[in-house]
Length: 116
Image (cartoon, rainbow, N blue to C red; front, side, top):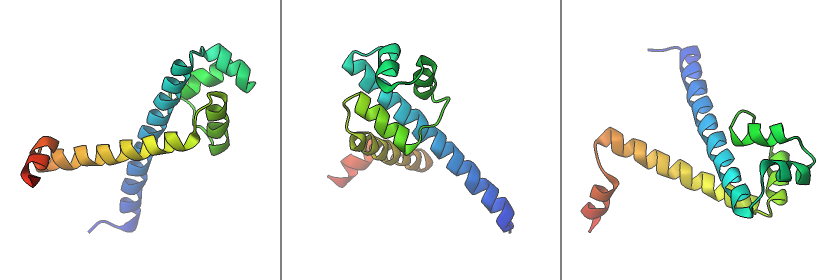
C-alpha cells in the first residue's frame, strides 16, 4: 500500500494538470471574446491600462489570472464573467465524459443510443 506522501504527490500532479487545462481553456475563451469584439491585443491592453505583453501572456496561458484580473479582463471585453465560468463547467464535464468513455471503450453516441 502506498503511503500518504506518495498519494499526496499523485493528487497534486492531477490538480496541476487540471488547473493547467482550465487555465488554458479560460485563456482561449478570453481570446475568443476579444476577437469577437474586434479588439487587437494592443487595444485591449490600452483599455485595461496593461501592457501588450500582459495580454499576450494571458492568452497564451503563460501567466495565471487572479479572480480580480479575470473580472477586469471581462469588463474590458464587455463580457459576463459568469459566462466564462459556465464555459469552464461545460469543458470540465465534457472532458470527464471523454475520459470515462475512453476507459470503458465507449462512444458517447453509443451511450445515447443505448438509452433509447
